[in-house]
Image (tube, rainbow, N blue to C red):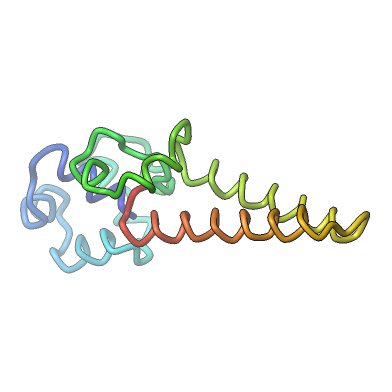
Length: 138
């Protein structure tokens, strides 16, 4: 639940401050921020403190923040590949389309050039997703 960390950081709160305001244990805040499951009661407490709907807290953050220092520190080749892309879902869709295209080419009319290129592009697109995951781009 990276959204909890982002909301907390936007307000310049420490984990300890959030724990006090929400009535939760600091360890619970740490667990939730690292993506572990949160109970319904925990989500209610956090939603109340941040003054957001509970569904907001359960959404996966997949949007690229292209204003962050983290984004600016990424290599040019990664940023160039994300031109016009706003979210992880878009990149996954592109990966799926390339994979489906490669499979269709393989089944309908195998080409010595098109089929391997489609699979290679799908692989590289998947690699970009994993790189973005590793560097917490979304």
